[in-house]
Image (cartoon, rainbow, N blue to C red; front, side, top):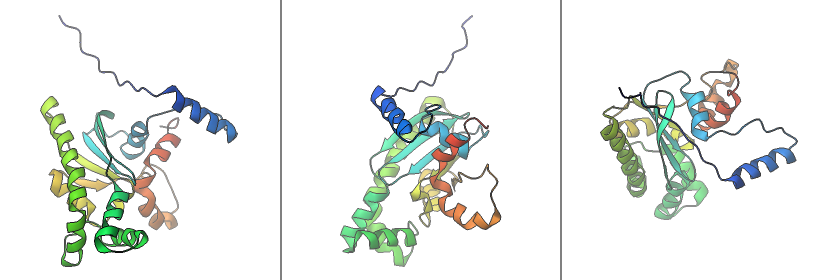
Length: 215
């Protein structure tokens, strides 16, 4: 009789990186208690004990990170070198406006489909397509290898705040899509609610690290 297979999550980090963080914490007068990969921290703050199969899409400024989470653990990871700042740059060039104005336009109109946004969408489409073509590839590989389907997509990072992003992601990937809230598992005064909505998708790693020895 065959023994059951054991799945192991192995993380490798260059010694130089660990040395750098040790040096930084010592200079700050802090005691380094541990190091953790960003995805594990994000899962803790965003998903908690949720064991469904989720695609975490973190739209950062410099990269877009894709992680398939199964039973609370990352089983596939991929980083795309196209992200928020690239969209800002291409808008600036395509519309002949400053980077600051392009950033404002991106935040105001986002990925909403409408006449007012038609020019913006056409300019951003090649880069957005690159992100989602890669994302679709990762999803298809996971489904093909495991025979399992994903339950939903959770969007993180600054890109999660773009108007229309949930609808766009859901349409492209054929899955329900929601914006992640890093503060969903902590108690805060109601007066902070407007601020929490604005920063909620961007603090998943920090909140997850803070919760490490609590949950």
